[in-house]
Length: 77
Length: 154
Image (cartoon, rainbow over all chains, first blue to last red; front, side, top):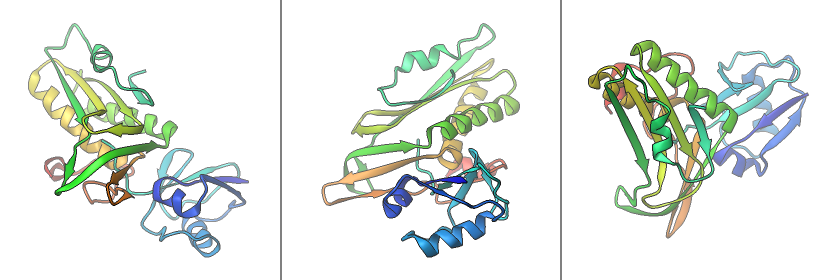
């Protein structure tokens, strides 16, 4: 299983902070497409992704237990 | 811990104290505060949110980048989250180096880099609404690479 984390406007849109789904073997891009199809989410294509707290490209393959976080454009500072 | 996300008001001196070094000839301190007016629009207050564990890692990465680029630099950064009112301190960056020019440059690098790679978001609250603010540089983040020179002078 995989934990998916949403932040900022994505969390507001998804109306939840996290989600447990099975994403093993999928690429990040495939997961994004699936989530956009099944949940009322804004465009995820331009949103950065982190797996286990490190940024990854869209072709990264997801492994069992990976924590996937979608990182909208940041605005700290 | 030299890199922190804090739910409480930041003690500025305690951030500075973390970079005190006998070899240092300068400490620069950047204090980011909540501004009332942005493009003429009045902010009432802000909510900052972070992916805390990752944010701490990314702050530490920035420190490491600085220590590679400016030898003998020492860095400490604390970013606050939660509700912040106008004039509240949102972030404190302290950098010590043997010579002053490096301390200024490295500190500038740290704040620009925070705006690129650290998972922290702010929600602006105005009299007539609220919105999550996107990346202030309006650029795509650099997951692994370094920012270009031009990015430091927006």
